[in-house]
View 1 (cartoon, rainbow, N blue to C red):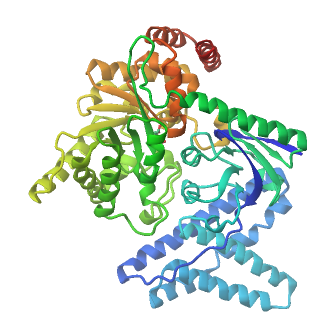
View 2 (view 1 turned 60 degrees about the horizontal axis):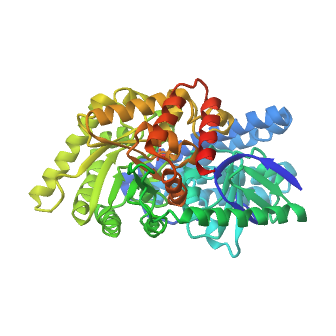
View 3 (view 1 turned 90 degrees about the vertical axis):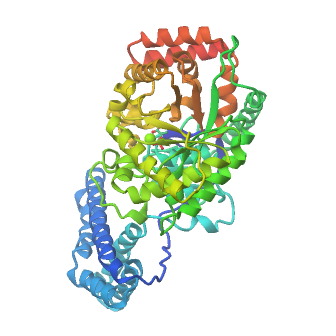
Length: 576
Ligand code: PEP
Ligand code: MG
């Protein structure tokens, strides 16, 4: 039995056999392309070569530091494949001639090379076939937008073990037989972790050696609440965890008693508890867990795991469905928030040095008004079917908000001309997730009807801590005094201008911070549906006055540790 420690990404306990992914078979579609797509396909190919090169060099560095230089040199052969002009030129010339997708052409050329090398008698050259195969798969994965296949044909329930899972990999787990997952890398608020919570899949990320220490079919206990993975547990440990599993179920039952009651404090202060979703299919779970409405609909998942862009009609039908299902309760649709750790293969955005600081979210949308306006029109059209609001991600200052609203006005104008009905009083929100927006929240109130605090990003930008990097995860602290002050400033600025302030970052669903946020005056909390009953239970157990005292005291503390300990103590006192 071995115990591995990682980062608790999605709570719950799951026991099952390991299913390792990584040596996946890639499915290559044979797609005909248009003349005008040729340069785009060539660019995609070249970018994939660059990305692969970077990936291999990183790997070499790691191996060289942890195992030895000699072992790292194995990858020199891989780098040589990437520089093989003959191979590259063959792909480009066949692409131009045959007009088939680069993924298909490349995989064909690859096959040919592997065949030739594996037929050669010389042992050294034979080895090259394996190198080409290996590096070829890496390149193909980049061309295909790194979507892994294999999770779809699982026959039994398993615990997925992988070096990393992209949000789209996790999205592909939807409805699959994945009961938990464990990854080598990743942080607590990576979108992969958020997806796991949404799918109610216990997850432990950042378990540095998961893929080397775990073998296929090993029995695993995944404790997503404590961030622990136990490989090959003994009978006693198994018994303990089965008991713990039962306990979790019974405590959860207790919280469930509050799920359909309003989130009102003992002295009558009512707040709104909403749910975060990524797919329309989550609406039943939203209702089941007692959410008032939807406080964050992350629409970018709509663009993932597909080759084309969603049409206006597709957007419209998805939003209409959610609006109708939730009517008369609010649904806040967030416009496309691509970038950071959410890459969409269709856009072929060149790799950036710092993707979280790069061309993402509203920046991308303002630069591509065609894509942005199409989504806005669909939201507006759907707005007549329920209580829809919209909000923009990653606003960093008033000019961006003005520009976004200007494009929204144009979209309204276009619909008016087409005589298509829409709600022209639709409420517009700004996500406050960039420190510059948090500091200028008073100015932003001029162009927004409400705020929603995105702590996942706000914390990473304010504390300079990459939210998906396990190495610095210990610094990712919602309880940092700087974060509390920023949140207070946002709420106070909103209230001064008489606009409501909500929070849709993961912090709002953390039991430890609820009392503080309530006391700071947060009007709306939005979180993964599964945690709603517990958060409601907490809010219903305290008076607003007491929560205000807790917030005031927390604001006077100087370290994260003090804030954490203080809020834990208060929570325990209140829940007895
Ligand atoms: C946030 O940043 O807090 C947020 C809710 O948005 P996302 O997690 O999708 O970046
Ligand atoms: Mg964000």
